[in-house]
Image (cartoon, rainbow over all chains, first blue to last red):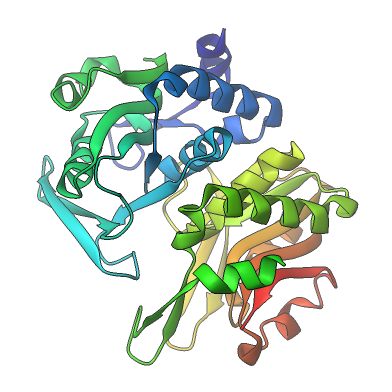
Length: 175
Length: 175
């Protein structure tokens, strides 16, 4: 089962990026080319019924499986990046963090009106960034078809933040 | 021909990231799923004879085609990131820029001794970051099998900086 295989390789890194946090490092998955393909296949199987027109991947770990999934499904990939990183004209969305705020952007001509768009990121924690990505899709007249994650941290209940955008919230393994 | 198809969609953005720079925006390639697959196939065709064991992709635009190429070839993908972004223990390499310096890192257990490793990035400009990636491969006992880029800026002659690491320098389109 993919969940158990992922649990066997995802690495806990203590006190990253700051003291008290146990970070889930997914880079060991990428060292296992066979498992990487299984992850892409599992995400494709769980999302192909959504009739997606595009996938947005959140900088920068969300680029990894997001772009492989888009390539597997044969649909456009659209990067969502932190403010100031995308070169062309952008739409941006600002959101609150525990301390301070963050802002993410998408190219203003990337998402077409009425497109069904999946939000992909490596990990669902509190859901703040995924929610911001959903808002950017709506700002461009797209629909939020769902969310996919490699890892979901159940105890932070980010899922509750995302349900108002879509009931399709896919994660391959939960902690 | 792939070079002409790329030239038709790569977008010039003036004065990004700073005044006087004409930035080559490759995100329109990613909006065209068919062309994206052609780019991955072209990179695979140009690199499959190198008997690669792994690909390192440079943060963060180098993640895009780097990881799709690794997935296509069925080999590990290893992210190289700016200092402080990788969670686990790292090796790092510091290099000079026109003004100041930069530092990139790789997880210390990612590259195995004697592996043939390809460096991938979206664009070859002066070659400083690609060179730093090559140094990180050598520090881990790997061999630099070559370099691949989607775009090469001929007038900056970054190629000259990289030849001492490998004569295999592949770029799909040149400006």
